[in-house]
Length: 322
Ligand SMILES: *Cc1c(COP(=O)(O)O)cnc(C)c1O
Ligand code: SF4
Image: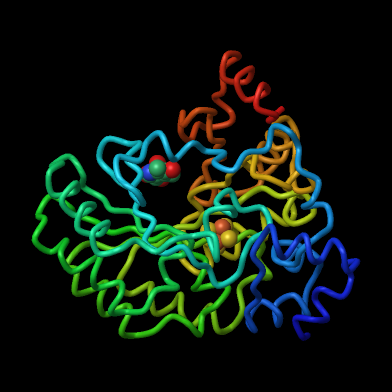
């Protein structure tokens, strides 16, 4: 399927507006996955006119990273770990992404001065045990570029672990290169990958080969977003957790969708999410059950949906998450 074919369903006018407002990219692996499978794969990546329907409550920074950024590209929300947005690019652009307005051509790369300032901040905060590489997708960087961020961490003894949040092993497995993995090893830190995957049919033979390789040297976890029309049935969620466990990936997070612009057609209510999660909990082993979480407004952070209190529910409702 060519790119033109993927966009053919869009009226010319909306197509122009969509491509202007949001990024679009597709990989051969995902084309293959969704030509062989159901709707759920394509809907994550192919532009849809409903994205132009932007609700007043939808935000450009829905999880409020900015107030917790001591420096550009660095988010320090939790005591012992920092999130470092080292790449503004992705291999695919998920239509529901909460960073969709800060990535791709709208995103900036950290400059040398930004990298040095972030490293100095990490060095000056001995409580930081974990550096989380994010973006965009950190695995879209070249190995030499990655080395500029990581190799200086060797000198910072209190950093024990590097965690990558990435979709590349699944959506663009051919882009996982040995020289990149070598830089990760050369950091001398413990490695963890949180692999983003929303549907079992995203696992192709090429992805499986990459995952088998990563398995030897890193802890593997997963992160998914609960999405209407993609994975909003207990059968699909069960098959996803089965697919993860078979690959020895521990299901870690199931996110409730954030209030990113133009995402209302993917949105489930909290009660719908809770009902699905309870059904899933009845079907799967405890070790296969991800944490179902939602980001509280104003940078309140991730909170288990089942433990929300009335004040938090009201705060979420005020921002449109009901
Ligand atoms: C989600 C997130 C983390 C990671 O939190 P964990 O509970 O360790 O998974 C760290 N920093 C920021 C800013 C985050 O949004
Ligand atoms: S890969 Fe991650 S950061 Fe990139 S568009 Fe998808 S969800 Fe957003």
